[in-house]
Image (cartoon, rainbow, N blue to C red; front, side):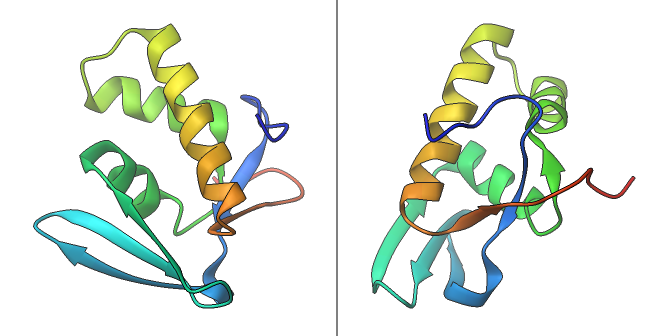
Length: 100
């Protein structure tokens, strides 16, 4: 899945993305490819968090605290979402540890 794991640090690819909110969900547009990507409630929460760099494991822990979901399901679906966002050019890997 695009090489993401719990130690990967990710953030939005802010130079190439325009976003808007519709009924609480985020619609993100990659201005370089002109492709839109719709995010549901959980995906929108991840998107909002990625305004700053996050270690994937910390994102997982945050989602576990905010939503009722099994840990393995949360991890699998988070990694899938990040792989999708990466393939659309909406996020980027960040070198080093995220700020505390």
